[in-house]
Image 1 (tube, rainbow, N blue to C red):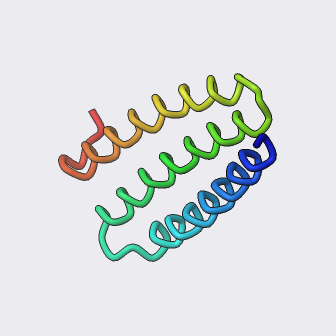
Image 2: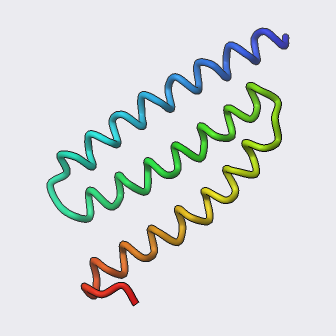
Length: 91
């Protein structure tokens, strides 16, 4: 059963990396600024999921701690970028 779980985690990791590449393409070729902002937020969420998957695969709690810090950073950067787009000033 442990081997099946490891294979499922590896497959999920590959899928997430593929989705990150699609989101990076959307940031690069997005039609509007909002499309690019949304794709950047999706990239942050997917990288967060990759950190959690790596923590499960390697059975190391440090990845989960890094994921929590990265989630806070992603949240703050998304709010700052959205505010910049809305008002053309950061603060």
